[in-house]
Image 1 (cartoon, helix red, strand yellow):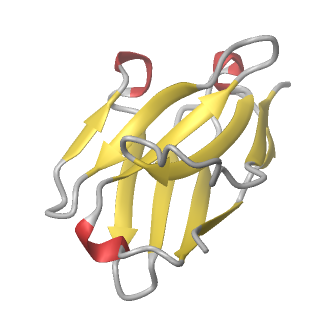
Image 2 (image 1 turned 60 degrees about the vertical axis):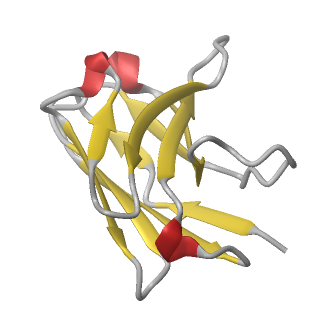
Length: 116
């Protein structure tokens, strides 16, 4: 059974930083591309960042230069370092394979709130 468990969210002031973690199980983690996704209030879920099995990264334009995705294959964990956070980054953040599994393997997500 594939499972993703996200953590690390919280309340942070604009300009602050957070580091999200996502622990994966039940999947051949080291050979798949992993992504971070987010769903803001009243919005559809959107893709944020991807890291391939070889470590190549890609980001949605709105987070380039502020967010960094990384992975630790030994720990089957993917990270998202978020700096210079803005109120518009407020969302529930999820991880999944990129592209996401067809089955509903989405985790609970972790809430990030950027507010003064």
